[in-house]
Length: 592
View 1 (cartoon, rainbow, N blue to C red):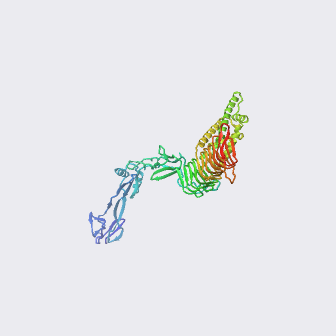
View 2: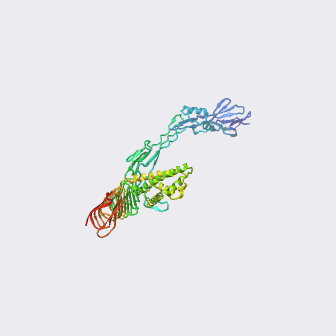
View 3: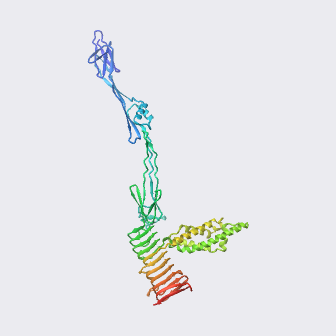
C-alpha cells in the first residue's frame, strides 16, 4: 500500500506506506520550515507515518510606535499609537494524496505592548505633568487598536470681560416722523439735530474684568488675556472724569463722537448752522447751543435754542425762542418771538409768588401759635383745623391767590410753554389743600411747612431765570408777540399791531402802528401812527422809564406807573416822564 499525506487543521498528517509501497511526498511551503526527523527539509521530501515531523512557521514582527503631540497652546497632549503587528503562518488544509505541495496562509495579530503606567511615564518624559486622563489611557489601551486620543487636558484661562462703552446721545440723525401717543404722526419734530445741555453725561463705560489664569499640561501658568480697553479722549468742550470712565459736556451744544481705532473722541459743537429753510422737511429745531438759520422759518414750525438764535430769512406763523437772544434779519409775521427762554414768560409769576409766600409764611406762624395755645389749654386741634380757622378769618386772600396761581399755570401749559417742575408741584399741592376739603384732614403742620419751602425755592428759581437779560433784534414785525428779558430793537421797517414786552427797553427805528408795548426800561420810537389811518397804540412803562417819540399821530396812549396820557394831535420830539414830586406825567414836545 502506497503512502498518503494530507493537511487537516493546519497539521501535516501521513499514513503508510506498507512494506512494499511507495512513500508519500511533499514540497514544503516557503513560509513554514518542514523538519523531518530533526532535519530541515527543502524540495521534494518523502514521508512515512514512522517519521518525526515538525512544522516551524515563520513569524514576522513589526514593532508598535507611540508618539506624543503637545498642542501649540500647551492646553492638550495627544497620543498617537500604532500597534505591534505579528504575522505567522499555518498550513492550508488539503485532502489525502500521494503527493502535495504545501500551502500556507498568514495569521496577523496586533497588540499594544504598553501599560498605563508606562504611558504616563512617557508623558512625563515629554514634560506633560498636569491634566493626565488616566481613565482614557486605560480605556484606549484596553481596546488594543491603534489611533489617536486625548491623553491630557489643561485648564484654559477664562476670557476677560472687555470694557463696555455706552454712548448716551443719539449718534445718527433720525429725520423721520414719530408716532404720537394719540396715534397721530408728528411730522414736525423729526429730531434731525441732537443737542445736550452743559454738564450732560455723554458717555460711560464699565471697567474691564480680568479673567482667571489657566494651567498648561506642562504645568505652566497661562495668563488670561488683558481685557480690551476703549480709551475716552475728551476734545473740544468736553471733560473726562478722574477715573476715565465718563465724559461730560462742558458747554451746551451738539455732541459728536468719532472712533479712532479703539479710542472714542468726544466734542461739543456749540453752534448749529442750518443752511436751509425750517419747514416740514427739516422739522422743528431744538438745540442746546447757538443756532444760525440761513433760510426762512415756515408757518407752524418752532425754533428753540438755549443759546442765541440768528435767522437770515423771514419768520411767518412760527415760534422762535432763544434763551440768550434772537436776531431775525427778515420780516416777522404772525409769530411768537421770545428771548430769555424759560424765564421770559415766567416773570409775571414773581409778583404773585412774592405776595403769596409772604402771606402764607405769616399764616404758618399764626397756625403754630394757635396749635401751641390749644395744646396748653388742654383743647388740642389739628393743623388742618387751625389753618382753616385762620384762612376763614384772617388770611382770606390765600385761597384767592392759590386759585390765581393755578389759573396761570393752566394757561401756561395750554400755551405749551415750559414750566419748572417745582412750580407745578407747589401749585398742585396748594390747590389740593386750599381749593378742596383736604385742608381739614391735615393732622400735623409738617406738610404745610414743606409747601412753604417749595414756594421759596420756586420764587428763587424764577428770580434767577428772570434776571437773565436776553435781547431781541428784528428787521420788522407784524401781528406778532415779542417778549424779551432784555431789550427789543426793531429796524426801520417798523412794528405793526404787535405786542412787545421787554425788561430793558424798546427801540423802534421805524414806524409803530397799533399794538401794545410794555417795558421796564425806556422806549424810543421814530414815529407812531399815520396821517391816513388811525390806530390805537399804547406804550406802558414802570415809574422809572421815559418815552421818546420823534413823530406821533393821534391815538397814542402813554402810561408810566399809574398815570397815563392820550395824545390827540400830531406832535414832534415827544418825551414823557413821571414827575416823582407831583406824581404826574411830564409831557414835552412840539405840536405839528
